[in-house]
Amino acid sequence: MLRFAFAVLILVTMAACTYRGGGDEPGVRKFTYFSMLNGDDIRDKCKTVPGYERYRIVYNGLHEEQVRIYELVRGPRDGHIVKASVSGPANVAEIDLRDLLSPWRPSVSERYLKDAQFKMLTDSLAEAGLFKGAPRGLDLPSDAFWWLAVGCKEGNVYFSAWRHPKPDLSTLSFVKPLLAEDATNVRFNPPRHPISHMPQQMTMKNDPRFMLKVGENGLTGVSNLF
Image 1 (cartoon, one colour):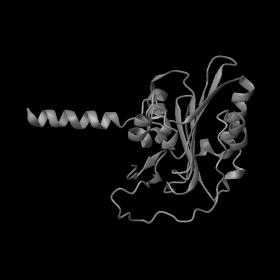
Image 2 (image 1 turned 90 degrees about the vertical axis):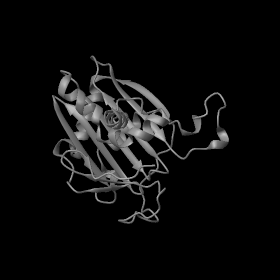
Image 3 (image 1 turned 135 degrees about the vertical axis):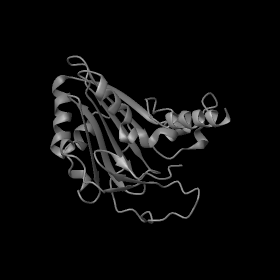
């Protein structure tokens, strides 16, 4: 009986780490971050929901400085949605006693797009190479600048990633049109050469940095988030 209860606990813990939405909540984001980046929720619906089309585009502008997450969702005619969610360093001096998690909540905006706007954004993702896939084995450390995109179209899952400086992130075709739809009013943290890069082996147990690696149409080999 004890062994069965332990097995159930493991399954519950694993399920809790699978992203199912609600990423604007600090607790949800902390424990499901890698799953969200891998688009596990998008992958599940892509297999089961006819006509489902959705894209998640993430900018890691040094994880501790800025993370921008964009959700691009196909809706009815001229009713598509683009949602922006931008996180930065928490300022506990501005804590709201009515919401103790306020310093860790992202700035959020949401806009409706017409068909032409939606097509322009999806075309720009295609031009950047989303539908061609990411280079397998590419490292995506938290202390670097990179974009990542995962999407579902016509029942197929697509995944790609781009790490600065090759390519130069400022040249990616989707960046300017995506930022143009961002109404969070949070200044974009442009790519630069970070002062330090993550070592291959991290020795500090509580080191908040992490390393992601691109595998077969997704992420693999993830380590230590928080």
